[in-house]
Length: 222
Image (tube, rainbow, N blue to C red):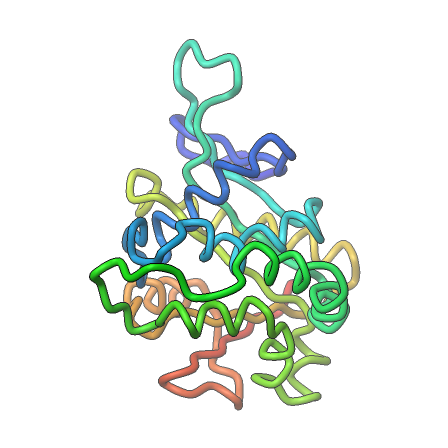
């Protein structure tokens, strides 16, 4: 783990007891980096697509940021994470076999209207939750070979702009490199311009399949 984390925070390996906290961070940052609670009929939708499958499949490639709250024997609150998988193709196969049936059972249809109209509609979210092949369709074979891993990273506002995102990415890349994984890719909400600026500063580059409406970035693990 990195040893230059700001004093008020700790980066550590994910623990199964962090599951609900990871889901909370996910939904609180899921609307272009803003709070998505109440945006859909079920606040569990975003975590069930973009967070919980990852900690279920690859808990050893999940790392969390916690606050060092005084007097908290549990080690503080989870305020951010990076979640990764080493082999996207294998993850997709697992998702189809294990996660899609669970997802469809939990979210069988679009729920009651919330009075809000997100650009990423609930019907699209339901489709994506049951269609992991979308992760492979966005990549060429050459891109998947060079960048087989992929990740999601999110931080609550209180943990942003303190170097924690960079340290989380460093931690995951080191773990992937130790497994012999050559590169990692990611997509992001094109409305989240601050995320794109961060990825550029960190060293991610646009992959050939990148499109403005479907961003795709990659970086070597070492």
